[in-house]
Amino acid sequence: MTTKKQTRREFIATGAAAVAALSLGKSVKAGPAAFNDVHPELNEITIAELQAKMKSGELTAVKLVEMYTARINELDPKIHSVLEINPDAMAIAAQMDKERKRGKMRSPLHGIPVLIKDNIETKDKMKTTAGSLALMDAPTPEEDAFVAAQLRKAGAVILGKTNLSEWANFRSTKSISGWSGRGGQTNNPYILDKNPCGSSAGTGAAISANLAAVGIGTETNGSIICPSVRNGLVGIKPTLGLVSRSGIIPIAHSQDTAGPMARTVADAAALLGVMAGEDKKDSITAGGKTHPKDYTAFLNKDGLRGAKLGVARQFIDSKTKPGQIAEKHLELLKSLGATLIDVEFPMLENVGTLRTQVLLYEFKADLNKYLAGRKSQYKTLADLIKFNNDNKEKEMPLFAQELFEQAEAKGPLTDDAYLKALAAVKKNTQADGIDALVDKNKLDAIVSPSGGTWSIAAVAGYPYITVPAGFVDGIPAGFAFFGKAFTEPALIKFAYAFEQATKLRETPKFLPSAV
Image (cartoon, rainbow, N blue to C red):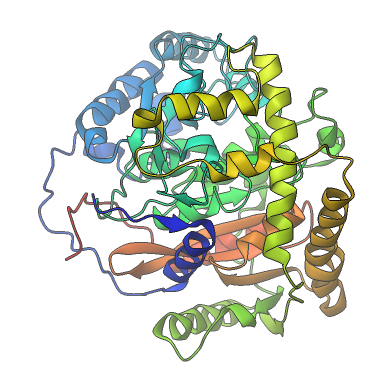
C-alpha cells in the first residue's frame, strides 16, 4: 500500500478536499469480482431485512455469526479491519435465538452482529488496546463500557473489535490514517491502496465491506465522519452527552463521543437508539431521559419538505468540479421541498491552534485518569512515551509521538491557557457559530459537503450526520447535515429523505488500485 506521512493539518485538509469532491456518476466499475465474495447475500442487507429473515426462520443469529465470520476470514486479509472475533459471539447468538423462540425480542438489534472499535471496553475474552501494543497485556476491564453494555442489553451480538488509528489518531503530528501497532494498516475496500481515513478506519472499512450489520466508531474531531465518508457509509456523530463516554479510552472529554456507522440511515438510527442513554458514571448524560429512545421514528421520505436549511457556502468552491456537483445536491434539496439560505461561519483567528491546545491538555489529564483505573503496568502518559521509545521498531516504524510529548509537557486543567482556549473555541463554534446561525436565520439545520465543517460540530459537541453522496476517483464522498445540540431527530429526518432520493451507496469491489 502506498502511504505518505502527513502533518495533522495536512491530513485534515486533504481529507476535507477528498470528501468534498463529489461525483454523481459511478466511478467504481462493477465487473467480475476479483475475490471470493463469501455469502454475497449479506451484501447491503439491512437490520430490518435480517430481522425479517430471523422471524421467518430462514436465518438465526447463530447462522449470521457463522456467515459474517466466514466473510471476515475470507475478505478481511485484504483490508485488515477486524482485530479479533469475539470468542463468545456464538454463545451470545445462541442465547438470542433461544429468547426469540420464546417470543422475547429485546430490541431491533436482537441477534444482530455488531463490530466495535478497539478503544471501547468489553469485560470478556477480547482485548481493549486503542491499537497500542502497550495495552496488549493489560488486565481485562472490570466492566463493559456503557455503550457495550447497552448493546448486550439490547440483544446485539458483539462480533469483534476493529482496528483504528492508534490512540484514536492522537499520537503524532504526522500519521498514516488507519495504522496501529497492533493491527497494522487498514485499507479502503473500494480501492485497496487508498486512505480509509481514521481514526475509526477499521469500523468504516469493515461495515462497508459487509463484515457485520452495523458498527460503532468514536470521534474527537472527524473520526466517525471521515471514515464513514471515505468508506461510503452513513455516520452519526451525536451531541456530546447523548452517548456515554464511560469505558472508552479517551482523548478529550470536551469533544469525545461514540456513534453509529452503518450502510443506511435507518440502520444508523436504530443503532443510535440503543447506544443512547443516561449513565450514572458520565454526568453529562444526565439529560438522557428527555431524548427519544427510538430514532427510527423520524425516518420520513418527505422529511425535507418545508425544511429551512442553511448552506455553509464558504466551504463550497463553485469554480471546481466538486463544488459544482455539491451545487447539484443543493438543487436536489430544493426540489425535495427545502428552503436554502447561505450562511457564513465566523472563523476565529488561530482556532486550529487553540483547539489543539485544548486537546493536548485534556488528553494528558483524561488518559492518566483512565490508565490509573485500568490497572495496566503503564499507568501514565509518561509511561507510554517510554514504552514507545523502548519499542520503536514495532510502535514507531512510520511516525513518532510528537502529540504524546506535547501533551506530557502541559500542566493541569486549571491552567489559564487551557481555560481561555476552551472558552474561545466553544464560543466560536457554539454561541457565535452554529447556535447564532441557526437562531438568526430560523434554520432547522445546516448542510454542506462532508468536509471542512465536521470540526465545527466536533468542537461544539453538536450532532453531525454524513450520507453517501457519490464518488470521486473511485472513492466515496458524502453530504452532511448538522445543527444545534440534540437535534438528531431532525437531522435523521433530513438525511433519510436525502438518502432515499439519491441512493448513492455502492458495494465495494476491493480494487487493488484506481481504474
